[in-house]
Length: 360
Image (cartoon, rainbow, N blue to C red; front, side):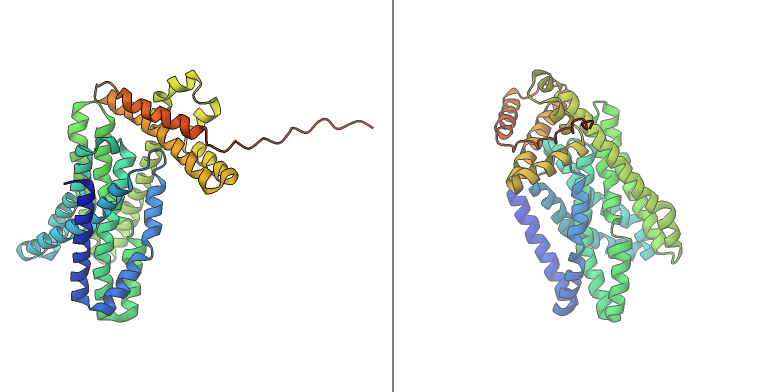
């Protein structure tokens, strides 16, 4: 199935899931719940995508990850969780089987990207970004049902409490759990060692299941949840942010190493080369392009950055796989760099240094 057909299929399945949720809640409660669930979503997506600085992932794949979480992952896990509730009881199901089923199903799309779209899965940052999207999709569909039920049973006050717990306090939970699977796959992709390629994804998935199970155990234990939240979940979130920051620095070093030849040949000035290899440098270049060239200038600067990143990661993938880089594709990126560079707005002229004060 082509990516476009997959996207359409997942979109249709998500629409069916939402229609079934509306049928169970009623049109009024569903509409209110959907709006409440959607309002913070752009903020959370924006925070996740901010880390995608060097090589932004294709919008189609990001949408596929989100829709997978909001459709197949949540429906299949819901059916399996219902069966386990009957077989094991709700507590054992929520602590043991539900985390396993949900993380396997959310992680499936990450494994699929890792195996079939190697050109768009280069490392830890990519794994975290895709994991955040599938987790946000899962949470969005799940929250609509929780918010609607709270509104029907307890009114606006119940909805407000549920939103505070799920939409604010626990907003990062599903992306956090699944990010461990993404980190494992990213580490496997960045390594040429066989044992890392085999064990890192399994270790990441096991960590996702364990963290999810601990969260559910705390949530079922009343006030103990807040202790688990403070002692385990917030430090885990902080650790994820640290991992993302380290991974961004690693990607900057990859770009520096893989584009060193072009820098030595004069394709980039020393200042441009330094900017391409750091998040801060790219942000400064983009803001400068916007100030001097408007939105069109910003777009050209973005295209310039993207072509440089694609060239660097193309070479990195070939090096890790022990293959020769695709020379024709390299030439395409180099031509794109040259074409965009010619259209970039001129850099700002630095202010003149003040001369010496005359002595009177």
